[in-house]
Image 1 (cartoon, rainbow, N blue to C red):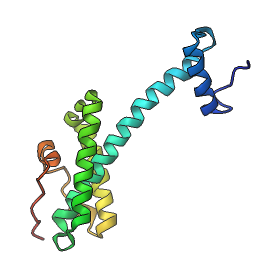
Image 2 (image 1 turned 90 degrees about the vertical axis):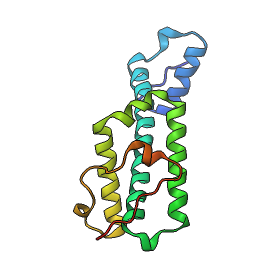
Image 3 (image 1 turned 30 degrees about the vertical axis):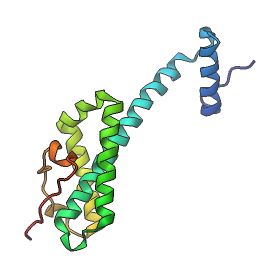
Image 4 (image 1 turned 60 degrees about the vertical axis):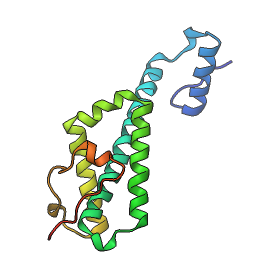
Amino acid sequence: MSVISYESDVVAWANQQAEFIRNKQFALLDLENLAEEIEDVGKSEQRELASRMAVLLQHLLKWQYQPERQGKSWQLTIKNQRECIKRCVRKTPSFKYCLKDEDWWANAWLDARTGAEKETGIGFDQFPEQCPWTAEQILAEDWLPSKVAR
């Protein structure tokens, strides 16, 4: 059996690496690339959580700044993102640290403001520089922000 290189076909390489582990052929493992791939799995999950939070925050901004356009679609997106975020945190308890990390929130908020600007036509600077809501409010099932007086 020839060893498949990581660079030539990452999917075939991953399958072969799994086979080596199952067969206890540890000497054939590509440890450096395996370590990187394992780290990447965690990073991918973190990106998904951050993306879901940005979408949730974006829709909360749209809800607050465009009350005339509020509808079932936005409510469903808000509800679905909350459920997915809670599920992610339940399945991966180490993600709780994200919800307490100021840099993580700042990045999610920046993405939300950018997305809300694109979707609403409201200027980026019209949205608060920092998220005005607590994590508890954002994730609460029945909470929605009040209309903004502009």
